Image (cartoon, rainbow, N blue to C red; front, top):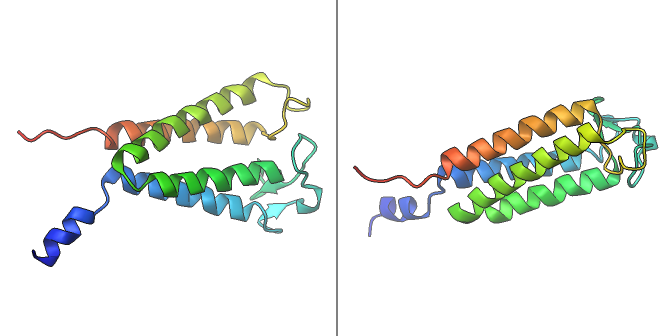
Length: 148
């Protein structure tokens, strides 16, 4: 068996590459959320609640819980990128979760206890883009190709 044949057999599909990339970005964002300077007002960060004034890149409101969710979501992406089916599921289900989070952020009062994640307007827009983007990646890259 040639080297080329083995390489082709173990190559990642586009949907696996996308899940791997999305997972890596979430992992990076989770780590960056714990770095003072990259996260402004770091000293005000709380475990959870809208009182946390810490903002990743000075824009996106974060808390310890929010950062831990990013880390877990990133690890899930890396783990589920192992197979095309799991990668597709990660992107579709993860995208759906982010669309629900976007709706949640629109509905709740950002100054109430319901904003435990916490989220702000910038987070809401990002969640919309992430949700739509992940679903698009999962749907478009996860389609089975037929030979003609």
